[in-house]
Length: 128
Image (cartoon, rainbow, N blue to C red):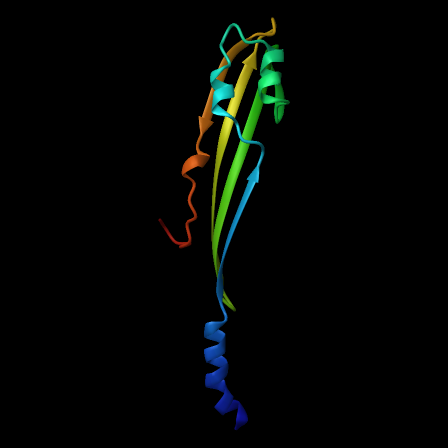
């Protein structure tokens, strides 16, 4: 009998106890555009790249060439937290820079992309 009287009260409390959560995380250092633009193919040396950008996040060797990879990942999560059911939406974008240094120690190629500027929190987990 007491259970039947308290059931509407418990249901109302259950509907009110929910929430939203927003989280953000980054991995890697910011890749400065002015440092990237100062790297010139054929003239900038390996030592100058390291002085401008620091140690690469990843170093590969391909056909006798050094490939320096610098990256930065940005992630944002919006969540709707209910008692029984939770919804989250994760958005991740990255900035990448690849500097290829030839056998003589000069920059052969520079490839970069910057996509983290437009990353937004997207709350609704279904579709756009």
